[in-house]
Length: 518
Image (cartoon, rainbow, N blue to C red; front, top):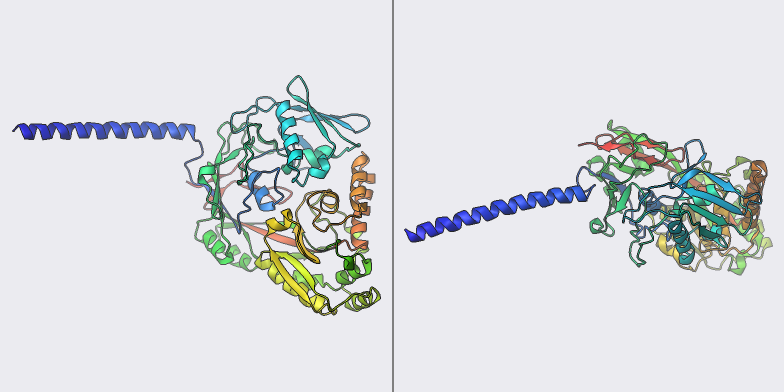
C-alpha cells in the first residue's frame, strides 16, 4: 500500500510538472511571438536561380542582391511614379547652393534602424564614410571627393561636392546602393546582413547559403514612401527567396505552389499564361553588350573593334532568347535614354567587317578569349556570338566561363567580354567606363566619364541631355562596347499566394500593400 501511494504521489508530481512546463512553454511562445514579429504566417516566396552571397548594399552591384536588399535598406530619397524626387529618410525639400557645390538636406524625425539605433545626421555621415572607405560600391566615383558633414542640430546633413552637380540627389542620394546602414554594423566577410531602416530585416538564423534567404517584418516600421496606402508595418510577415539553379525545377516550384513569384524563361511563358491563377507582368532588364579589353594591344585599333561590332547580327541573337535588340548604350526605361543616338552605331555588315580586319592587320588565327558569366543563357548566347565571329575569319574563339561575382570583383584574362549591366540612369556610362572598380574593360579614354560629369554640372535639362547623348555617341562611334540586347522579363505571380501587388514604372514588383493568402 505504501508503494502504491508513493507511486500515485510521484505520478501526480510528474503530471503537475508536465502541466507547469506546458504552461511555461505556451507563455514563452507567446512572448517570442510578440518579440519576434514576422516569424509566423505564410511567406511570400520569390524564386531566383542563384544566391548572390553578398547583400550589403555598399559592397555589391548584383541585381539579384539589390532585389533582396531593397526590402531591407533605404536611401535618403526615392523617385515617385511620376519621376519626381521625394524624401524617404529625408524630408522632401533639399537645398543647393547657387554654385551647385553644396547640398543641404533635412532628415525625417523618429526613424530607427532594425538594431534600435536612431537615424541622425551623424549616422548618415558615418554611413557615407563607410561606403567611401570600403571602396567597392558602384557609386564610388560619384562620391569621390564628396565631404558629408553632420550639423549640430542632429537632422541637417551637408554634402560638399568637388564640382557642381545639380543631379546629385536623383542619381546618388536616391540610388538604392546609397542606402543608409546602421552605425552598429560589424564588418565581416560574411553575407553582409546589415541593419537598415526598411520594412524587412535579415534573419541570419534562417539563411541557408545557396538554398534560401528569409526576411522578416520590421514591426516598428512607420515611414513608407507616399505612394503606398499602408502607413504601418507591412502586412506580409516574411519574404523568402529560394535559390534553384535548374530552370525546370524553378518552374515546378512555381506551378506546384511552392513559390509565389518567378521571372520566367521565354519557353515557359505560354505554359504559365494558360494557368488562370497566375498574373503576368512585363518588364525590361539591362543591356547585354560585347566589350573589349583595352589592355590588349589588338583592341587599341578602333578598326578592329568596329569590325567585331559589324560582325554581330543582333536580330539573330535576339531570336535565341527573351530579348529585344539594343541599339543604344542605355535602355528605354533609363534616365537619359534617347533613341536618336542609335545612328552613331554599327549595324550588321560582315563584308565590311572582314575588310576592316584586313586594314587593321589583325591576326585572325590568334586565340581570342571570350569571357562570359556562368549561365546557361550566356552559354547559348556565346555560342551564337562565336559562330558569327568565326564567319568573319576569327577562327580561334575560346569561351571562358567565370562566376558573375568573380567578373565583378577580380581582374580577368580576356579579349572580349559578353556581359550585362542594369542601371537606372545615364551615370552607368561613367561607372562602367570611368575610374572605379566597375570599369571591367580597363577603358582609360576618360572622354565618356567626362561627358557624364558635364551633364551633371548643369541645371539646364536640355543641355544635360545633349551631354548624355554625346557620351552615348562616343561609346557607339568608338565601339567601346557594342550594345546587343535588352532582356525581356516576364514575372509570374501566383494569385493563390498573394494579392495586392503592383508594378512600378521601372518594372519592379511592389508588395508593401499586398498580403499573402492564409
